[in-house]
View 1: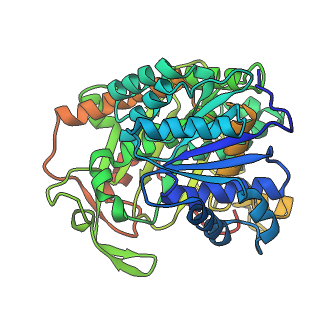
View 2: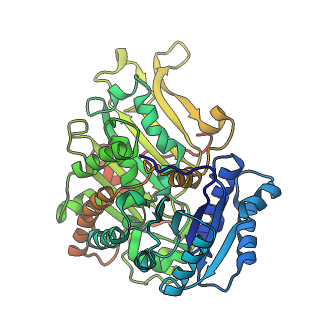
View 3: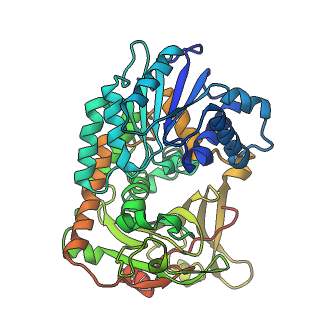
Length: 500
């Protein structure tokens, strides 16, 4: 049930860590897009909470510059931007300073604000301090209003730390107040997975072990670790991408139909998928995962250094920058169907996609020459950069020779709807302001993902390696990655970037 806000009630959007890049690159441009589309509840007070020596005017200038540089809609409507930012306030305080939270409470009281959305745009190590101080200052609930809190990933670093964070969060906030954000879930194509499956009678009957040979989910990045070397050394692909993005995409792809399209029903089905993942431990993990690390090479036309030469990275590091995994979902729908997940940095293209590979008919049609390969039927959900859906199937090639060739049917979001899809943060901020948690992860969902992931991490620790296989920056990984999937007589799909 959504908590209501009248059109006259002021709302506060309180950003802890407002001075970071996330605010000016994503959050404020998203608010601006919502405002000019008349999808933002007003009046809205933007409250920045951070340690830097800023004031209200400098905050406004920084937010204004962020919208000018990063908003989708150009040119920026200066009048509307000023209206959006007119109620901007800056509170200078550390996250452990009680006085800062007292001043925050006074600001909310002075402006008669009873509806508050907190956003933790801070390093994860600050989450517990902020949550505890909000509780001590009694800023976790207001009579006649609502309070919600958005928590960015990473939500813990393993099962134990995630459980500790959950305990601290629930000491202060009820579960329905907590919005754990994964921006991938705000992508239009990710949301389209459910519509595509359940609103079209021709696909859902095929979405099971009887017709699907295997599924490939790819999250590829062209960038290296950049300035995040210190963080990445403690995270690697498994914590940075696998535990959240990849497992979320898997859950949405594999879930059964919810009884309704609301937060609890959708998340119930996603949790069932995560709980049905076949557990792995010990050497079984080593057989079903593959790790590698990039070395120097050419990426996007430029010569780049290897991972061990990045700043704040140990020269003897065994942190993975590439990971592939084969998972099974032990339920009635997917029994025996492998899900191949892979992600890496310094790969040839930036792309996220879900590829459903259908089974090949048992016999070639009349012994015709099949130019389409071993499995011509393929459905690809393009999540980024060009959102859309592509269906590949076999058709007769023109001419007197009987040959089957691959052809494609494509849906491109921009072509079909006449514009770029909204940024993920636009949808997620709108939903959090309206109290719709459907696209946010629930407590049991986070813990189920960490429970599965932690088994993998523990197995890697139990069987340490001196060096990982390496791959040149700008390639799709080392030969071992191809051998990993090749053991099952399958091959990685090579994503093609362009119009979907």
